[in-house]
Image 1 (cartoon, rainbow, N blue to C red):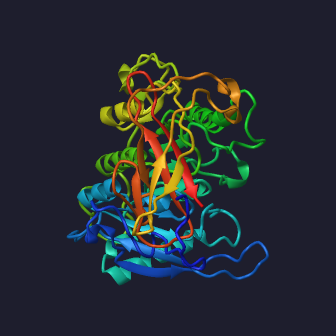
Image 2: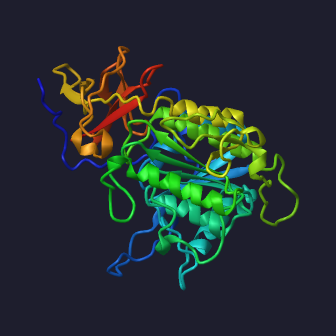
Image 3: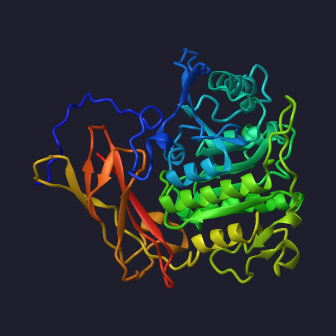
Amino acid sequence: MNILPRWNRHCILIGAAVVILCRSQLSAADAIWQYHITCPRDPDKRHRPRQPADVFLWIPPHVHTLRAILIGGRIGIESELVVDPQIRNVCRKDRAGIVYFSPHPMAVFHYWQQENQDAQRLLDVLARLAEISGHEEIRRIPWITIGHSTAGIFARNVAYWNPNRTAAVIHIKSGNFHQQQHLPPHGTLAGIPLLAINGQFETFGPEGGLKPHLGRETQWVCVREDIQKFRRRDPNHLMSLLVQPGADHFHGAPSLAACIALFIRKTMRYRVPQQLPPGDQPVQCLKLQATDGWLSDPDFYHPTHPPAPYTQYSGDPVLAMWHYDKEMAETVCRFMRNLDKHQVLATPSIQWLDVADGWSFTVKSSFLDKIPVKYGGHIAGRQVAHSSAPICYFARINEPLKQITANRFQLLRPIPRFSVAAYHPGDDHFRSTIRWRTIP
């Protein structure tokens, strides 16, 4: 029977930042947020006061002194990433805490504008978290900023504001770098590793919307152009782009979280001091130059230059993507392999099961034989084949869903909506692909 479970329509969604119900591989110590405060928010556009944001702090178990903190806030994908076991495992091993805002109180961080309080607000939050946690080092250790969509502006503007303390920037499915209203009048991102992530088929684009000849590929192509403009001005802009094959603007995936976890691990290795220096001054990040890293081909569809150390790269080093080292470069390239060998999944369908618990359902998807016309650009309507390997299914890690079998799930408590994904990891002939559905 295809009937939705009958729960109270007024049930309350308790977000990942408040109560974490995660997959079984997360222990209780991993899943908890040990400390909570609130942070004031600016009035809304009609100048009405808004409720303060919640701020949560996670400190890895058995860590006496933190080396760095990962800072982000709830806009979209961040709520998944801050509890992802791959990311938490890296943070635990490398002694990095996590600070998470819900909702994000400073998503664009226009610190240069008169009367803007974002910079002081951030410092105040860190000082209060240091006090209540007993980890005084939080006042001065480096940070890694992370932001999805609008909050990508926060992630990079914090780096403009305080480059010496910003170990790296993780810029997830966010806008272009050249929009003047979101750029400070002075400053540079040179010397700060930045990983930009975009979905291959995002529905959002730069000013003016999607370009007809690019369709839904507009956003990542324009972000790549912006990165190359930065690197032309100064090759020490340590920037790279990771395109998530087949993906849209709104969702993450475990495979994407794995790449982010690796980037965090490399940041902790190459940018953050192993030991906390004495004193009470902000800890400066370790210096890096472009020549310290590896480069890879910016032509993601038809790469001809293999990843190599900066001085050995066979292509134009100014146009290339920059990476910390061999492992990071090869991981990014492997993630995007066969990017032009398209296979496309249909939106998953849900079938509620007429079983005793009343909360179980199956998920099913199939491969399409054409790229949807709505994708636009030169690939719209193109005939495509697909791998013979089976389709995989999973749910968002921060939602109360238990996977029973390969395509059967159980809802553990009533929530207004939840999301499930159909995914194929790709093979030697086809790129990976993913398709999400949100219910209802």
